[in-house]
Length: 248
Image (tube, rainbow, N blue to C red; front, side, top):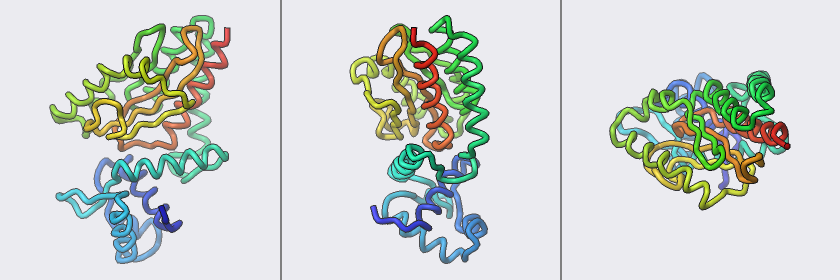
């Protein structure tokens, strides 16, 4: 996709501001952020909308990201993170990441002689750090923590959304066993999810080796509206640290 640097910056700003405020992002807000006119921002937003990366809810003049927009953003994040770089300096700051990884490492290290407790501790840490639902496979069972976090999100207030999320959770464990995703980190955004495609949720999971299986998974489930830079790095770290500590 042929996107200018400014368009990438605007898409990034829309995604990260929407993650923070949970309401569509308008041109006036972005114009102040970038120091350009609202007309310039509206022109760029129109181009992003034509690309299918953002959309305009009928009740608002602002824009929100589409699943396609999130996917483009996440792919770019992964490219940068593999090179040790960062997309923005807001919620993706190194200091926040270091504090988060230290919290995970400390809790896991305290339980490293007990694999099940170590994995549960890592999940509980991810729940606290991301505000999402945390999941992990432990000896053939799915451990979940933070369900209240998930259903406290404004996206999941309707009965239809709750039903779709419940369908996803009910089928997550058998799906992981059947498909066994092989990448160290997997991100399924909205309609990319194996089940519950209309739930408006994103599943971010890391695969690691444990005493239970070579394909043990840990991750989080939350709304598509979230801080992917922070969450992806924390989930990746949790998987890598667990594999290191549980190498019996």
